[in-house]
Image (cartoon, rainbow, N blue to C red):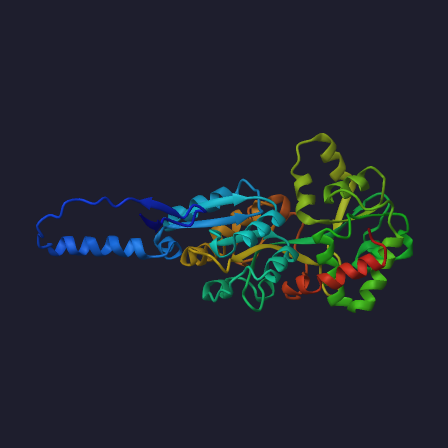
Length: 372
């Protein structure tokens, strides 16, 4: 019995039975037969990971669940002939799956949202640094790690939403205003341990220093209208319901409500407005959707092509519009009138990798000030 590896799937071997037969007179092999015999022997001896490289497939683990991403995969296959095998799940589940699969993991690329989650994957040593002139030319330096372990392919901003009737725009022009005593009992924001707020706090550490960021966080806690709960859309609804006057949310949630056909959502959006904070100083905090090639990727050439494809103008539009975000590549114009209606703004210029590196300290500070 001979065991022959058959691919990247967990069941890696199949049994091939060799039967004993009467010896036959030797027949000289033709050159063609010798070539085919050599090829068959080579295929049998190659490890599964090496043979998988010759297959035109890409195994994608993604925490993005947007219908428009399907067009990405279809177009990539049409252009390259590489089939995309997709597994969708939450970030934590996918990261645990890659860890448990170890060297036998079939995954080539991991995609998710938020620099904090990408940083966690990097800390688990899951990404392989990728030297790509295409990605370096098209993805701005601040939207990729200096080590080139992962890349941001679209951006969103964390902004301040306020009640038009009770708040003047000048009162919430900066993140620092969220800690001002005039907003005492008037602020809604989600829990501190959510990665969106951890990334915001990581940015504030970079801009204000650890001591300044801690003082700011204490002021935010003092101004809460209620204990943090729910998601970003719940914070906007809290403003609309009069539960609070000010909230902190990601822009794509705001745009999602702008696009809603529900009468109550349209009424809500007439009551609230949005401001991009810190336009006169360090700029509005931004985050990314992004990904990278996994260290154990069996299909490395396909992984590189896929990540480079995500930086093309065509793919950028699909990738960004899928979640009402802005393309990372300047030449790609999103086809999203509601998003465009928010206008242009000054974004912070810190490298996106800082958001991950500062997160452990951010969590310690938030715990210390009692931000639940």
